[in-house]
Image (cartoon, rainbow, N blue to C red; front, side):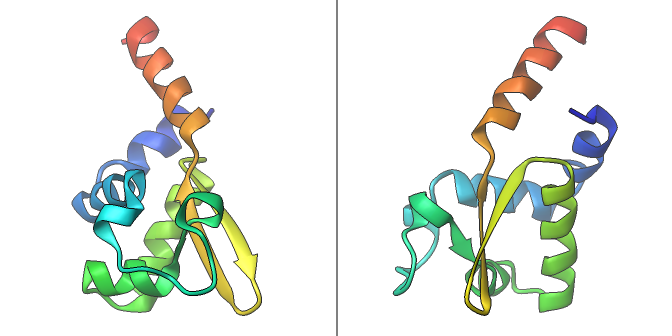
Length: 100
């Protein structure tokens, strides 16, 4: 776990919002036709719509969260879906409790 990458990824309001929305995707996103939220995650287009930002900015944010290990990505056809990596959040919680 790269703590610096994680804290850098968490240092932006929109990226924090994305992580919170992905914690309960059924509450925060409209239904998807081709993929289950809990199984594969939320399509990048739905996340981009919710953020109200350009796709390139949202893709950059998602890439940063993915690189930090906080998200998992699944590619289905031309679409990429993102969900939280809950194990990473458990490890982060353990790190904060023990080291900080």
